[in-house]
Every structure is written in C-alpha cells, then in structure tokens.
Image (cartoon, rainbow, N blue to C red):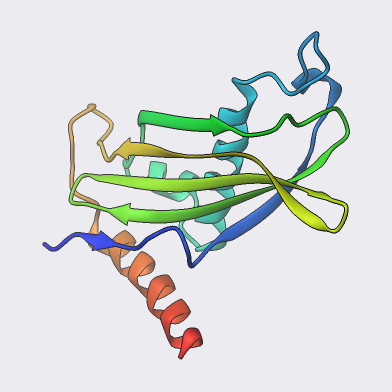
Length: 153
C-alpha cells in the first residue's frame, strides 16, 4: 500500500484557545510543556472535524501513541491571550503519521508566530503491536485531501 503524503499547507484546521492562569509559569508566560497540550487539542479537533474522532478510532482498537515531538518556541503566550492552533496531517505512512503545527496570536492586525513543530505517531493495536492504518481511515483522509485539492482548482 502506498504512503499518503502532503505538506503542511492544506488542509489546515484551526482552533482557538484562551490561555488560562494555570497555563503560565512564575514568569507570567505559558509554561513550555503546555504547548504539547495545545498541539494535542489541535490534533484531536482536526481528526474530529474530519469525522475520524480519536474516540471512534479507539473503539476500532486503533491507538496513536506519540513517538516523537518537536517544538520551536518563537515568542511567549501570556495569560488571557487568545491563540490559534493550526494543525495539518502532513504525512501518513503504513504504520505511522506526522502532524504539523503552528501556534499564533493576533497582534496589531497581524499574526505573530509563537511556536511551530511536529509530532510523529505510531499506529498500534490494543496489545501494543504496530498495525497498518485501516483502509476506512486511509480512505477518509484521502477524501479530505482530494476535496481540498478540488477546491483549489
């Protein structure tokens, strides 16, 4: 089965999040580990938006544990900032996938980049064994990518 691949351009799903006081550290900025929680929100909501919610995948016995994460911090988020988490499914291989992220804040009429990065995930069953992505999930992803490509024409 061929790998599915698409760069972090489209389709991109965006979700907003308001920074709460509990997200910040003693310096008044968002604690670095909380950005991983933000990208999880982005990833979860992207999959839900594509009608492939994680809850349904788990009912099918599919689990996507994190195998690698990378975040580059560019500017701090602060208490009460309204930030946008942009997420795309950049790549689907036989037993793994990669998501790309951009966390931004609107500032003075422009978008300020706060962080960017990616996460890699394995596709495993309930016994923890690697498994290929099921055809129904691959087909759903291909439909989303094809729909976006058709819109661009």
